[in-house]
Length: 144
Image 1 (tube, rainbow, N blue to C red):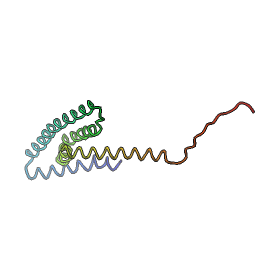
Image 2: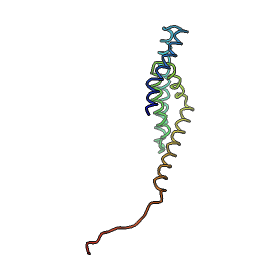
Image 3: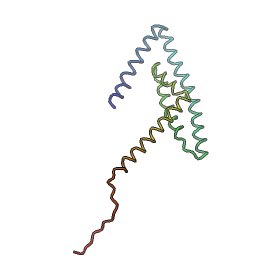
Image 4: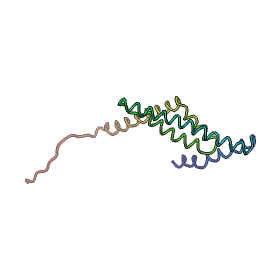
């Protein structure tokens, strides 16, 4: 867990800074700032569209009596994509924009859901297949 947090809070910002410096050298500071603001605005607009589409899918599945598990995972992914797109920088924007591709997002959500279900099945089989279950009755008698 420490490695993940270390990567998120130290390595990713350093990558972002390095990319921003290099883009700033090529295009200049003003254009780099405009690009950062532009990607955030474009990302927010696309995120709104995809979010509304996902909400509509959730409502449609619920109206049909189906569990909208995949759509709920997609909604969580869109929330993460929004955070990535609003974070200043281009490295996180790449991952945020990738999540906004509906087919890719749906595939990732289905893979995650299938993996989660399989892990739950494995846990239950491990807990019940240990062979140590003994059925019986026990009672104590007061007579000696």
